[in-house]
Image (tube, rainbow, N blue to C red; front, top):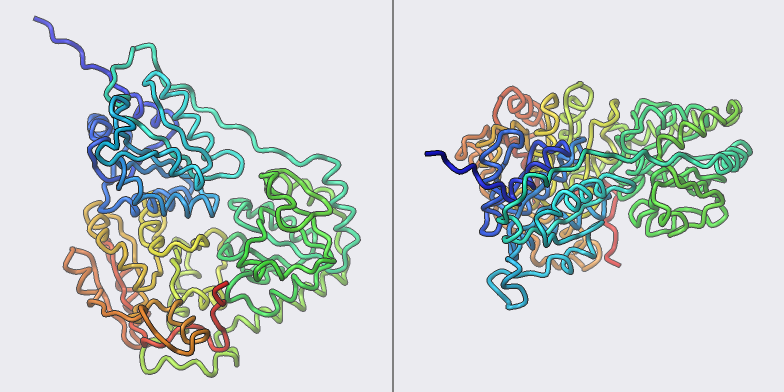
Length: 557
């Protein structure tokens, strides 16, 4: 007596479509409305399922995977599970990071009854995603799910949310309903007339500046060639300082909180500003006051809605950053010697300002515990050595790396500019899973790390050997500094007690090390890197220690 063939369901079709799109890893948390989909993942081996301890971690892990070059996918259940993942979606939207969030949904037979954990997924995520769609027929899964993938990675990237009702996931699917083929659109090239107009403006400039933002990610070679042809200073937007090598003769730092005076003054004094993949964001422009109204602007962006949103360009160019940089470099005449000399003089000023031997650091007082200069020096060893990827969360240590850490290799640093605490550790897990050839080292504040520290167990279980530097000052440092500078030192809600993070790591089977003096930082970090385990390196700082001397936190506005 024969057996009936297994029924092919909507859940199976979802997995088939993800496989067709090249997805080989999904991060998520089990829940009622996604159990059929998890079962479909269990019955195949093309896609790895990494289950985390919190949906926020799954979302940030997917975000990190995308930043490392492979589309990140997160899977969460309805209601609370989806809400927990919302912060990752919002952060990805703000930073133009492609991400696919799959959300289980109540079946259509009980919608609009306020059923258990029911949520209007479309209305909830629409303001913070590039596109959100709910699938109501199993035979439309290939059309809508694969369109979601294309939407996430095409043009200006961003998160896309797909709501999958339980009845759609459980529905039987006919054999002739198959995934579509994988398709990717070619990026737009610049219009020839736009290139001509831009070249005319740039050729006549005496003080041109090239500002590059996140939209130019992955275009290092093209940007470097353009910078050489312009002989202009190259400045990145906030936390995008790894777009070009810091050894480039034109590199003049990154804008944003912690930027050096020479970096900001160079932008202020520019007669022509060439902005590539740059949104003129609040931090990068000192709340939209940095660019002189008289400065003439050439603005290149793949998203036409960004051109003129903040500053009206004289030449607006809708184009892929790499294609535009190539076209401009091909058409530009050789630079003048005067322009080259000016660039070189600015470069020397920048190098002096970024030295850890700078007189500006003479008043730094770590109060007997670990100084941030010692941590920068230890991280510099990694930055100078191929095979490492540094990932920075949102700690009060951030301005130190912004000002003083030099990155000779483009693409060796990642930082979150979206403002979401707790991004670094889970994003580092995603980057390590996407790039096993690199050793990922994350730097978090104690407040950020402790928000997601439970998923160190995930790193141990899944054998993801990230090294996590936790800068521990027993305080929400950024808020503490604002209370000190803007509220008369009236501290409330910023101090707390922490465990021994190294011992915590060891309790979960990870490696743990603790540095309480400057001399212990380097050896602790090297010991962690010598392991094949996830590791935590706790760097203990004074409760009131924080920003580089002379730097005040931006006021709340």
